[in-house]
Length: 510
Image (cartoon, rainbow, N blue to C red; front, side, top):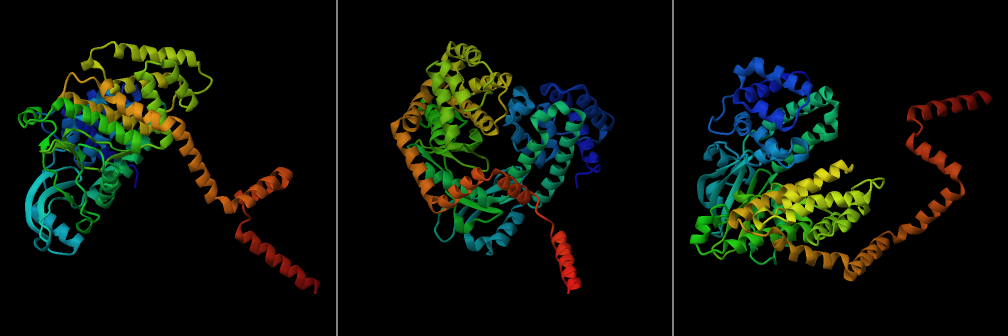
């Protein structure tokens, strides 16, 4: 229940942020108004002694969030994708947030597997290790399938995590409503929508069948991508709380020295990471939205391995074309084109000055292009671009923010491999090829074919639809009354009363 009892949970949260020194950092990062600052102090400072101490070796915000537990850790990770809500500085700090949770006993994991897969672990696996990784929602064990000898990773959801998350999410909803009440100006950032998005994401991540489905679809999309592989799920050994997939053997992407020692070309790996991400986002519209170092390895043959598909991004075909044209316009330094695309897509209201918008874009792009290769950043460009579009009245577009956040993370991975990588040079072939394929004559023919298929599916309904449209045009008043009746149908109880009255009238007349 999202009631006042959640104040106790918010007090514990505020007390922990006060005790760890995170409260001031958070309030400053989001430039909180005075009412919010006052409420935060009331909920935190007097009860400081109730707060969790946390790990003093961690930065304040990370220290507070990890001390509060799994739901707060996951919420921090989700907020790291919403720079529009928490600000760029705090989003950067939250991106450093790592799961720092102890594993639960292997015996409990085995019991969960037996309950889910309806067979003893020893019957399913010839080898089963202690936990090799523990996160906020699940932990991973290394195993070998007894029947086939296939080496796999077995991911098991933490016991009781669903109920724990629900309790904390309840408090988050209450806190979001309180923030909107105390500071109406925050409603444009939609705090309650952010919490609802978090709730949906977390509930989805607890059903490992959805992650298996994402891995399967992603694997099909990328099957022919050279130098890239993903661990595919083992469906017969997976369920709602257990996910079994191929074991990803390789060197961590974040260990540059080890990669060089193994003979890998880190410059080539850096370019490939950038190009793979853009290919998946533009070509497929379905991309790994959590491509940090911890989810990437390099196989012995040089392939990039991606895993952990709990967070995936999806972009529709139209948005992909708009995004590609925007990137291509910047690559060509054609700011009029970039401005025109924004206006044509409806991203910027038509009552704004397109020429002024183009000049604002030039002010964003030129300093970046004038920098040396190590300072050229597509992620920063997109971040600055959102600042400009906000000034010109562009509403928040969540799917582009997730794309921008992932681009920043991917750039960070690429830079760690090759600090001198020119991001634009790496991106240009992918963006150019997509533009040729999606905007040229072949794309127009393909679009017409899709239109024909759509019309064909509705073919049997077209005569009736045309007849209805013509009738509404010929008899507008009757059509209006029909629409009103459809929206406000006569209640059944009134129909019954009228029927009884009519029956009584007929009886009396007889």
